[in-house]
Image (cartoon, rainbow, N blue to C red):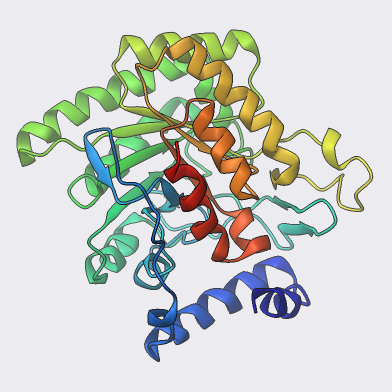
Length: 338
């Protein structure tokens, strides 16, 4: 069935197809059709960051940027959902076209640039949602905020998200916002995470509720950068890390018509690069900081491999586009055995 749906959606450009798919999903939910989709029977509950997840398979940020489709996405069987990336002020993102489907390679290049309605409007969507499961809120900086002032944007979003999120993700690794990845450099990174840690402690006292925060990192960092990230994650007792975001590398798609398009590459071509980054992190962190593995998980075996290589949880995005909701069920079956 999904092969037919995919065939139709792939007749449109990726961004148009995305909007059609999401609105169709909402319509199917309205008519009760999503209730016909059985929940994964073999999902294994896991406790990570002090949070109980009904299974280890989550939705990565980016599919539901504005938290508009939480309820219907939850009915597909995810163990957790992550929305965003959200910024303090609304912004349109980069000019179109900004998304390119590499069908043969099972990849996607995007340069959206944190297009979103702003955290205030997104919070209203979250408040209207009936979803009671684990919700991650992914936050970033506005495109026109100078890098030296980026901390302010993250603090603004962190405060607003805190009382609604189950966990919060600090996105410093999108390649589509100018200079954003500089926040992974040692001085910027330490200043950022130490400031957010202070804010987390203060808000935990204010609300009598501890909300973990995670750092989402790039797959393109060198060993020196990764070593600094590992050292500082441990130094500041950061709750978790997400490995990884999209890549700027094109070695896996060198023959593609779209290889020269700017933006982050996801899907199958990202798999090995993301896995190697996760493996390096796991070795350095020695199990002291939980990892969510994401990037190139296109088959159930990919998810099993990420769990075997140290991830506590996994997320999908491109895999859902190419494989459909059956991938969630297959991943739950595979990861249940670990």
